[in-house]
Image (cartoon, rainbow, N blue to C red; front, side, top):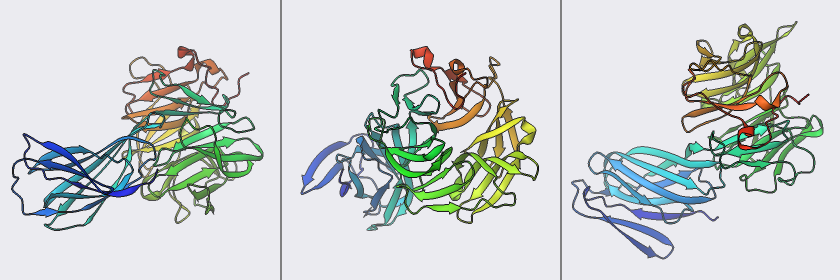
Length: 421
């Protein structure tokens, strides 16, 4: 799709009655909203630039709001527009909000972004609106099931699974981690554990029939994360960490030196200001100790860290949500540990449903956080696929504890990381 500039004229004049007329002049769409007069000191013509616009869009809207004229929402007729001129009354605290609804095959169901600015009469300043994921479907890396799976929600509708054949890949796939970029493209880390078996694949959506290998190395990749702000990709084979652009180019091997040194990596997640959170281990000279690290890729240094050995298991993954870092711990005591962003303070521990006392089986991977819900890959630790499940909660205290088993809708059980015996 060719993205192009456009223009929208907003003349908000009456909060009670508005009429919309669509005029086409050359290739530039205009939306004109007319009515009675709003008191203002002239108009401004800011240029709104939209960042992270996905390729396949069903609908797109622009809302402009302010105290003196309320909120006006209009459809943007050409969903390929990434830059548009908006004519609005001048004044303070003008909020521009873009909402995008992708086509159904996309894993993201809604994007949203906003920016608030003060506008003087005649001003044509730039307004950057960066879209972020507002809601999305659930993506599952099913390593021993040799597939990636997408479902709409925790009831299992919209089930789509892709194995190597469906993705145009020769060898069997073992997806150990999965993430998406700002446009909704899907990346997954293949852990082939062989020569040329470490591969980062990308597909545009679950409708894609040809996965693109971006990075190929020996061994196997165990973790990845996408920096959707800076369009960077981070991935690890368990002992090393690399950074590249979203096409796998400009690759850089990152030092994991401490103190304390990151000895091994199980999971990685984006933090604020480009920082990473790494779930893994530190080697004290005698044994590997489970740790969570806050890591600065720019300086290639550990900024903060926490010894997790007191929680009774290995630390498999981490996730920043709001002002909290969550750590997935599994082993003799399966739990999710809530920490401060600097990892210095424990905020709480969740090991079971606070209502039914249903215990965590073995949290291995934070799948995503969307729709105000956290999704966790929860694996039974005695090699019993039939109880492997997705666990969803609304907050770190376990509110809204809900589980999903593929067998409930007649699908093959999840394999996750432990091969069945």
